[in-house]
Length: 488
Image: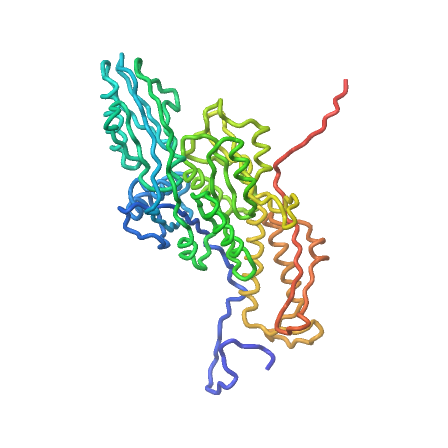
């Protein structure tokens, strides 16, 4: 009997017609895309640190991690930008020996007209009513009350016990991330009531981020496709890079890209980018903006994830980063400055006429090869994303159609119906798959691929099939250059 059966035994003697089903040729494997959000919780949260938790709503995030926590606000931003992507969180606790960032808001002068103060903290507007004749102390008390009334803010406030026109604000959690909480007045066209002068002491002195070792351990071998990374200290980035490289490798094959963000001047942003070199991290340089970097990273990640899951080869340029505010016009980086950052491993954005923040170019932080020479092979995030999908399709094809096959040389005369793989069969299958991926717009040059493709049984291990695979990825239309020689 030449046909190979999976379940019907050859020793069966009971009369009857026995039919087994095999779905190898029918099924289509697919990826269940997931975004993982790393961040800090508050003690009021109901979910402990280090526990992978699926989060579907902002209300759940507030319950799980505490209202006003970093994670709760990350999910508020994420769900505002995209509702349907599956999202998970692994929380970290603050480090007890750390310190919380602190800043000041100072009111000077009495109001000479009625009006409303528009104070922005972490991009959120707090409106404080002012009546003509209100003293600076009265205004400070009103500001503190208004800040504390919004329990979703990342800070709490108290009037200074000595300088009674000064409001002291403190981040709800300890760590360096609180230093990037922006405090300002009048982002839009608001006007400060006459007689009142507001000054701000920027958030500072926050120290000691959580260590993400426990977060990485909690991930295990679960395949999360993207992660939001709020911590940009060197120690945590090194830990993350090591884990991302491991996941990308051939023994795990559960690659994950990380989205992070850096807040600072142009010079500081370039220096930060040049200190890193990893093809699986993309960092958006935010400039000096209202929302903190952990919010920028969250929105950038969910927008990127949505569209990369649809087509990994299509560029993310011109996609709206919903919910973010741009720097004020005089602070925005020029074309020259943004182009420099794109050579420093920093992704960039532009600002539309209506103030919308849109992705300009989503690059990775990879800049040099192992010989420390400039290398653009992983410049764009689309490259590792597309390779990840190609690898998944190839693995799925072999696992689905050839799960329990024998392996023989091409010279063997294989009886019909036998579960035997040969190098020529593998090559034919890969060529069919390449055609399918070409139709999806991921790869090109079928003839070149066909010519380069090699399949063989390993000379030293007859149970191993070796394949040399050389796909030519499609590019992305980013620059259109035209040389015009006009005539008269």
